Image (cartoon, rainbow, N blue to C red):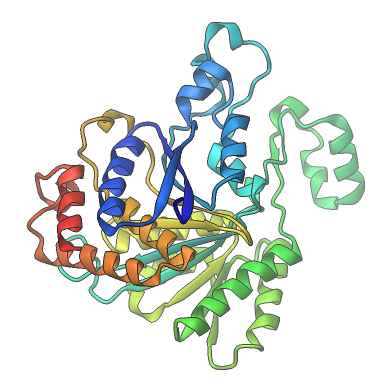
Length: 372
């Protein structure tokens, strides 16, 4: 009987291509695992009205962790237009299945390493080694939104907040509201995770990224909790930066930063910026980690125009496999896998189009497997 049961969710678009590449490497490294395929993505939205069927949630509940490819997402009106005719007009609303997975399994920590492997021609600077900790279940991703704004909500806001008065003359159908929800507990969890990672991996600093000078209550709460928790980690420096300023400073002085921690939306933004510093989304892996379960994925999208062409860079997904091995406790296999990736990047002989090469997704995976 295999040691691990791993949910295998290729999704759609190039998700299927990069997951096929990851399987080549995992087979070569001889991970003792059973991979159980699950349904997720645009195909199931179109024909079932649900991109994350209940059967897939149950599948995940009976596995140790999950490796996920990519999915297509479209705005509300476009998504409804692509439903099967029998499902249209039934009030079905598309929502991101990966966001739902994060909330369903309380995968509260989003871990995104961004490392410049020597020899990568796409590196902004050699030596960049950033890790972004992004709170994964709250903020604007909570999904508490209104459009049009219900009258009872407007009345309550007018009664309880003076700054709503300037919107009172606007028709309710012309107002959309999304709530930014930040809780003390979730803030404490992600901040402590960042400091614990820094301590365990001998990192020199943690930079908390928010915007408390404007978003005073939510960002303010997050910053205050970071200051409290930092006192328990005297050997690690705490820095604070506004989200707009850090985007400039990361471009100007990326080697000055180490571990960054922030809320959900800001984390989404700066992790993509950090990814570009080390070669783009083809090198950007992610772990969605909870107390008892984790989902690992590349952070790129499904790129439907490239689906089935085996053109895109599989390294992000293979690095996500490395994160999965780490989480499972397979430290030696994880280290061997990262070393193999680093060798292929440094040699710069086998590479996909984004790196200036002509090799396929699977050829890159096969070369990494050979290096193992």
